[in-house]
Image (cartoon, rainbow, N blue to C red):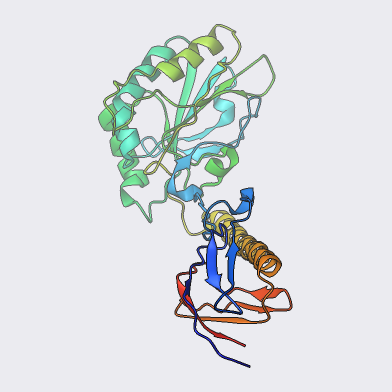
Length: 332
């Protein structure tokens, strides 16, 4: 069979097939291929699917408990006095504010003097207040019992500042942040029930919003006056405000991270499968258009990046996302 050389053939990306003009089979015969109608799925070049994954540990945010949640029992020591406090100590109060704080956290440092002011004000109105530190003294020695006692004495905490060494109380409350505020109401002989779980206010160390205690103050006013809980309860969170868990306390956290990693692997597999399906569908569009309009027995291209387009009785093969200008070197 005769061999002939022909001009260049321009094939853009498989999603859009523009006009292709080439002299085929005979130097005197010109075959023009018009672009097929655009298909919505292939109206732009195929790109690998990108998955954005948010890792929860990157931004710690208080979540997980609902209003009406009953205050868990606790029995914790107060480093300043050596006294052991329990939840039963507060049974006679109409409301109880439980705060998870620590010494080193910049979010706590930013608010701690205003926390003391707020506590003094509302404790005089009948509110019970207790602060708990569940931070690991292994990872942060400055949060250990000795320094807790010094902090409570220096700032004149009007509330007991308790040490949760095992971190079991923090887990029972669902606490993950510092500071994190749980406001409970007491209705007669019923157990303490969660009334408010949210932020102190909008102020952060990184912004210029003045510390006001607005959100927490409004919630305390409501619970002491017998009103309904505030509808807007913004969770407290921040990159630097997470509780520092000990090795034992981190077991559940590590399990969650492993589960997230396994889920991410599955998502990546599914994304890769979707990309391949899109490629296959695009190939089929190009194959059917060329086979229907040209009807060649075989065409071999050279000059493109890893590209081979062959047509055998109406069947085509295209092995490139990016098809550049190539020349027909042989027609057999």
